Structure formats: structure tokens, C-alpha cells
Amino acid sequence: MARLLCVTSDMPGMLFPAVELSRRLARAGHELTYSSPEAARPTVAAAGIDFTPLEPGRFTEFLEGDAKTSRWRRIRSWRSRRAHAAEAIGSPSLESTLRRVEPDLLLIDGELHAEIITAVTA
Image (tube, rainbow, N blue to C red):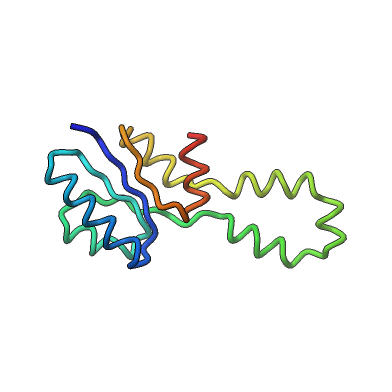
């Protein structure tokens, strides 16, 4: 059977259906790992699925710092800002999970943009 990795947020509208799908896939014989923010651990563990925490990325931190910079300075430093944004958008915890699990199939929440970018570039 296939080795699967499911990555979602911990929002109930995405978490509960994805955990149920993951539980069914695991019951069908697939090797399943679930990655989500730490708050989802009890729900995933109750379904008997291997859990790996998804650590928050640094992009929000970058945006907050960038918002405090004057417009003129942001315009003048667009090259370095773009480089810093590219560095901050990744998800190091997902990257290490992808290396460890080496999934045959990745199921990922479409709203997790930084994680999608990480998955495509990893």
C-alpha cells in the first residue's frame, strides 16, 4: 500500500473531515502520517494516526515587520524585501517531515500556501 502524508490546518472545518479520510485510508492499509499545528494532536491521536506537528512559518513575522517599514523604504529596498520574503515563506517543519516520511501521495489543505510552496520546491 501507499505511504501518505496529510497536511491541514487545525481549523475544525478542515481538520475533522481530513482526519476521517485519513482514518479510513489507514484502515484500508495505507501508511498514514498527519501533519498539522500542535492543537490538532488530540483529534489526530484519537483516530490512531501518526502525528507530526506543523510548526508555524516565518512569513507572518516577515509581513508584520514589513508593515512597520515606511512605504518609501519598502520601494527602495524591493530587491532585499523580495529575497527576505522568499526565505520566510517556506515551512521548515514540513520540509523535514517530507524528507522523513517520503510520501507516495501528499494530501494538503489548499489554504496552506507556504506549505504548498515548500512541498513543490522540496
